[in-house]
Length: 221
Image (cartoon, rainbow, N blue to C red; front, side, top):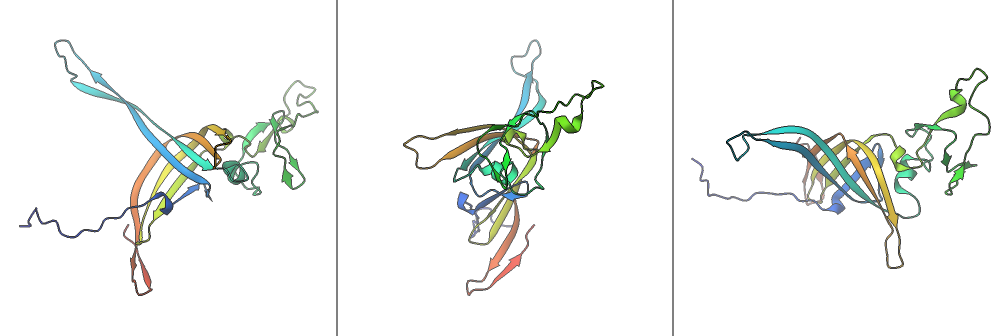
């Protein structure tokens, strides 16, 4: 029988923010400074006459929400990778009205100043119906709340060869905030989001390190 008080040597792994990378959709966002989430669920007590304490708890809806903080260097972090300032024409788009105000492309550059892109030609046909091609077009997002849903994959690997991963599924960005003052050494953007599901942290790999200089990759999960 094993001695339950025999606490032999065990190996534990820890990770810091410097060990972590985050991929939004299929783009690694290097400007991400912090990310957090919270899971809440409605649970209500059930009472009956003659009992002061609840006899059971009814389980209801679950909600997942969180927040991100980005460092602002010389461009908007999300819109540069997943929006209108991205040079990749294969980015996810949404259907927008041509009458909306938006930044507009000027040659190969996109003006950072909001400019009206009001359509001069009417989208209403002589028959009184809407010409959809004249009224709407697929567009890249110029506000973060226009970005289509995406997954956030977070991976961590420390210097001892341990690695883990988690995923936030179906992320929808809601709010964006920014401010700067004369006392700020770093310029930051804050965003909040909701999500459909969470795939929690799990061990995904471990490298068996040979400190003589060689390293062999070993899969644990």
